[in-house]
Structures are given as structure tokens and as C-alpha cells.
Image (cartoon, rainbow, N blue to C red):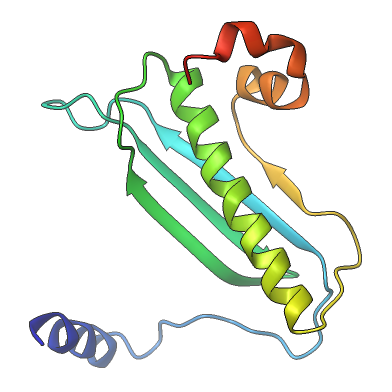
Length: 131
């Protein structure tokens, strides 16, 4: 109940804030993922985050502390990409059940070139089997 009151106080105090859902919107989904390696100094755990857009409307977002300690920033980014991929799959199934067809394949953006190379090339599996 305290959490509900806190949310209502926030909404009351920020009336100009909100999410924008345009009436004329393209049906293409894109996602952005990122991580903060070893963000928690005591536990050395990283934070994963992603946001998903349908056209120009934000439809899903999440930020969460990773369950395991990542050995490198590459590993933390790769885990963030994996979480974003799961969300993309779930949103695709949801849209399909609502009989909404996406116009283009879903694009997932990240800022780590090594993580992109591993995600695109299954040959690197030997180097990443610990993830």
C-alpha cells in the first residue's frame, strides 16, 4: 500500500511527465540494451537495462541487477543483450497473438562491439561457453 501511495504522490507531483503514444505509428520494433559493469562495489554485480520501442512509442523497459558476477564488461553486455532478446521474443509473441504483424525484423542496438561480434558469430562459442 505504501508503494501505491508513493506512485500516486509522484504522479501528482509531476503532471507534465508521461509516455507518448502517437496515433499514426509505424509497426517496426527496435530495442536498445546496455549494462553497467560491476556497478555495485560490494558485490561486484553488474546492472542490465533495455528499452523497446514500437515505432516511436516506448512500450517496454527494464533495469535489473544481474544475478551473477560478470568477469568482464563484455560478459555483462552480452547478458544484457540476452535479456533484451528474451523481451523481444516475448513482445513478438504478444503482438502475434493480438494479430499485429511487424513490418520489418526487430533491430537490437548495443554499444559494445565485442558483444555484437559474439552475438552475430556462433564460432566464438568456445570462448563464451562460461556465460
